[in-house]
Structures are given as structure tokens and as C-alpha cells.
Length: 504
Image (cartoon, rainbow, N blue to C red; front, side, top):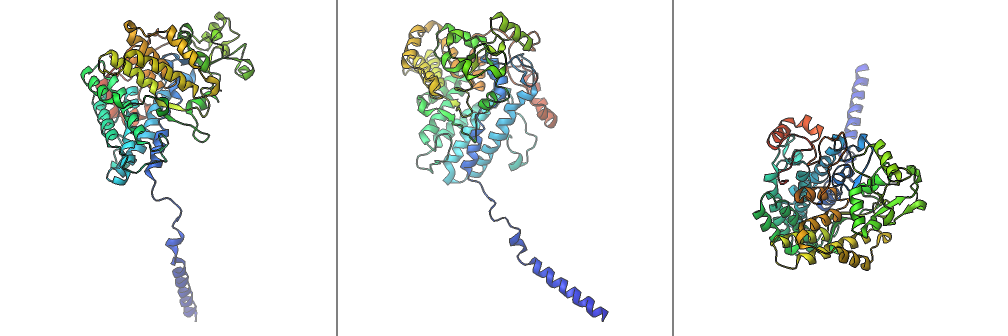
């Protein structure tokens, strides 16, 4: 009898086990999980990654002496001309993780699918833009093997020299721009241009124009060839600007920083404010604010805010916190909190756009190309004046309170006429202004052109007179040390003084 009970129990267990197995796979399959991702969504993620990280204010914007902080610690950077790798690594992390990884995957998934030809070529353009920023920031960087960890299991990519990267960036922009087609699928969900193919082509040509001008001092023949080819097809009006229109879900990174923890810690730099003041530039009223009598951050309120250009005072370069206190006293200010700031309630709002490539920048590069005799259409003066007006109107588009009247534009151009004898200085000084808050581009063109003429940062503890590049991340050095070491051996010391290839 006992054996019979055991046998029946065994049969029951078998039946139950069989019943449990029935439908097991179906029950444990997530029917709502996405098994694939529309490549345009991934491309949009990459495009959002082009927005300038907050660390560009600590380094690039500070290097060109537009915005500065007297504070140390996490804000150490161009204010002291010291190496702070917590910040120099940010471009690396942002563009590799948010842009290159996504564009690389989009390119891999769409390269053999004719239905996604436009997305494929858009991804190539966005990727080329990111690589230009990376190599301009650091010099030698992973390029050929970059972003190949998932697809090819390349976890320790080798580094390509900037000299070898630039021709391939140029090739990518030329090929991808030419391959974009109105007969292909129009990707209206694209956040940059809503699938507008002519605008994408103009974006590619504008980046090509930049790339060509970078080579002026190292390969003028190639520079001329590239610029001549790109010039007829670039962005020439503000309605075609390449920008990220931030919203409540995807806020402007710099705007977020300057409206939160660092709202009271960054100030317009004296060289920038003084230039705008001495030239009677109406952009000063449009972007700057001083909080009259403010003795602390909480006293920087709308009630004591003034846009009056006559009383704007930029913070001198080379000051720590104690030095800023003295500089404010010397200037007759209530405290250093009264130094002028970029107005976070107008220009650097949470939803202010990130301008990637603009008509103003292109017109100025065309003015230089015309001065050099590389193009024959138009005159340098026309390009110059149109560029200045375009940037002033660009600022006006950010906030109604920053609108610059046409009369003020005309008055400025009459008071500061184009001078052929000082053409390159004038053009590139305007490029400096037109690239305000576009730290990577302002930093690159300043090194490339040598303008505007800026004094060395006088901070007593500086490591270099001028910062020429950003240093590699410590994490990259410890994980991919052999390849980093090879890059350093070929390029020069991994410090702020070493120049990138095109910087002569």
C-alpha cells in the first residue's frame, strides 16, 4: 500500500509539472518590449548630444575670455589656467557616449538599407561634427575604431592623429551631403531640420567650410579647395541655422547650470565686456545684466537688474575668490556679485537654443575666404556686414527682451566700418562674438586665427599662459593606457600647453 501512495504522488507531481510547463514561454515573454528602435529616434539622441556640455563654460568659453568664475574646486579651469580633469574629460564622455555611440549604431544598422539612406547620411554628418569637436579639443583621438565596442568588440581603440582624421571628416561630409536625396524617405521626426534635405545639405557644407578653414595654416592648398567647394551651399540665413531647440524635457545644459547651482558663480569677463563697450556694440545690452548693489547671490534679483551698457563691468581675468573681492572694490562695486553676468533670465534660459552652426559664422568665414581670394562671389565687406546683422538678429530670436532694433545694427556698422587693412582681425574678432557660448568653436577659431588678440591669463598659479588643448580623461589613461601612451608619444605631453596639429 505504501508503494501505491508513493507511485500516485509521483504521478501527481508529473502532471503538475507538465501543467506548469504549458504556456511557460508565453507567460515569460514581454510582449510590449521593443525589439528594434527606429534609427531616427537614435539619431535624435545623438543630435541632442551635440549640445555643449556645462564644462565648456569652465574651459573653452573661459579660454577665449568671455565668461569666467573666480571659484576653485570643481570650477577650476580657464579661470586659473590649470588642469582639472574632472572637467577636461566631459567633452570626451559626452561626445563619445552620447553622439559617437549612437551615430555608429545608426550607421551600422542602415548602411545597407536603401529605405534609410537619408538617415544613414544624416548620421554620418552628425558624427563628423562630433569628431571635429573631439579632435579639435584633444588632438589625437580614437576615430577608426571609435564606437566599435558592441559591433566589433573593440574595447581598447587605437588613436588616430588629427592630421589623418581631418581628411576623413572632409570625405564623410562631402559624401554624405551629396548622397542626401529628396526622393528618399523624408524623416519628419528629425529634431534638427524636420527632415528638410536642402537644410541638411547646407549643414554638411557649413561643417565642410569650417573644416577647410581649420587647415589654413597647415595645408592652405587643401583648405582653399575644400572652402571653394563648400562655399556655394552653406547656411546663409538664420532660418537655416543648425540648432537644438530645447524644451522642458531636454533643457539647455549651460542654461540649466547657470540657473541652478552656479547661478551666482559665473561672470562676463573683462576683455569681452570692454570690447563690446568700446565699440558701442548693442549686443552688450542684449546679453548682459548687472545686479546693482548686490552683496551676495540671493541679492541678484530682477528688481535690481540693469541692462544699461554704460554700467556693465566685466570681471578681470586671473582672480581667485579673494582676488575677485579686491577687483570689485577697486572697481567701486558693492561686491564681486555686482560684476556683469550673461543674463540667465533672457539669454541662458533653460529652454534657450544651442546654436551649432549659424549663418553669422558662415558669412564671416566666407568674408575671410574672399579676403584670401579663394572665392569670387560678393565682397568681404558685404559678408562681414551681413554676418554682424545676422548675429544681432539671432540674439533677438532668443528672447523679446533681447531684441536689437535695425537702427542699432545700422548705427553699429556705421561706427565700426569694415577696414580691408585689418580684415582678418576684424572678421575673426566678430567670429569670437558670434560664437558666444559655443565654446568649442570659439576656442578652435581663436587658436586657428590668432584673433581676437587677448592678454595672457595673469593668475599667479597658472600652469600655462594660454590653454591650447584639453587633457585626456584619467579613466581613459588607466583603461586604455597603451594606446593613450602611443598618442602622447607622437603628439606631445598630455598637458594644456601641447598644440593640436592645425594650431600653428
